Length: 90
Image 1 (spheres, rainbow, N blue to C red):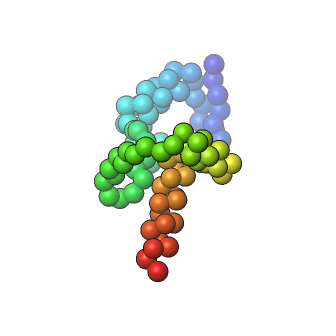
Image 2: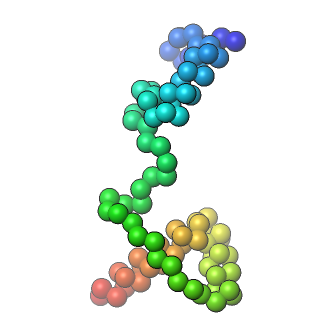
Image 3: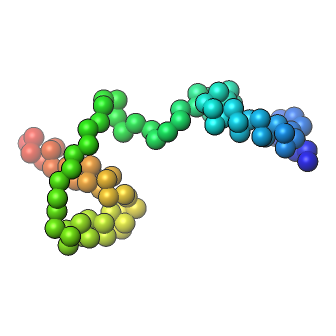
């Protein structure tokens, strides 16, 4: 099947298959710029995993609040720690 792009260029299913393969290999030169595979970095510095235990009820409360805010548990906890560190700097 043929498709007409906004710029008038005719594209086929084979064109889309080729572009998808290039994108998945990280070699696509489309308008989105350089393709970076994997999850985006959280910051410019390296990250370190921090693991600790909490009571099940607290984890449930964290998950509930994170969901209310549209965040993952990790994002919620990163934000909470960040706020606590800023508050302690005063």
